[in-house]
Image (cartoon, rainbow, N blue to C red; front, side):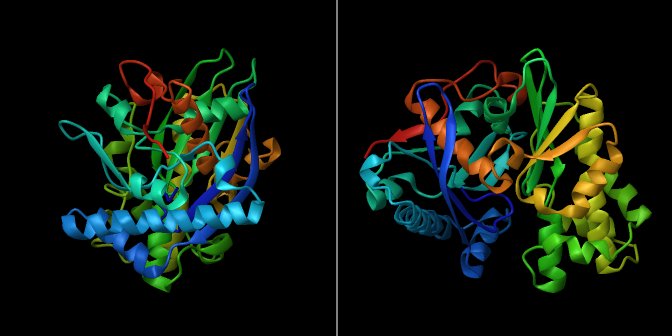
Length: 359
């Protein structure tokens, strides 16, 4: 998959046993080229639609995915014939759960991917949930429950990708969750604009800045934050144009903007957990933001009574959880099992997710 952070392609090889145990066998990451990343950003920009360009990008992404899959299989010594299926999330270029009717678009041509790899592909995971009245996101909570649930203990799994979302794994077995706001997307795009860097490694830059309270309060006034779940969001809302509108009239240094964006992610996430999972005892962090020490420190600051730990403690490195989820969801699709959680997405009922493209 490629996510809202648009940094690279995450590819994993997962063994799912009959007893539903999931084991990560091998992993491979390939950074997106600047050219491909720029094309994705262009396709995601509502003011720059070109059906021809999007169709070509759809094919180019499939070719990129195929190259990554072939590299992963070569690295792991596994032949394509031994792979049951590819679960391909693709690249989201538009997510509009509040449109009437709602829609979501992921590209990375699944039929082309089948032809290039010779492996069955399961794709288009979000559309069926939307057709059933859901947001199409987040889809992670069911997988988080599969990996991390502990009977008698309420845990919250925090996914810090481009967008932040939480999965509340209640002690009684019930699952809830929703997007809480931006995680890395604003910080990454600001670092690219100001420093030409794809992200602020180890938060070195942000750590040298100070929180600007005027900017922070302006960001916290975003009406979407006060909406009740189910809810989902993306860079359609939280983008640099949105940030620029809050910076208008303020004199804030670039480094202080970066520090404030980090605080914004920590505060919106922590507030969501305090409001919707106040009895949670343990927090499990995954996604690229799990390697941002400043962000983790600020989450711990705002939630001092919670135990924070990495998904690494559960034998799943933070950067591979989401890609593994789509392998697992593909397995569920092939076995006729539902992949959504109506209490999370707002769908009217459970549905089998995804379209199957047989080899």
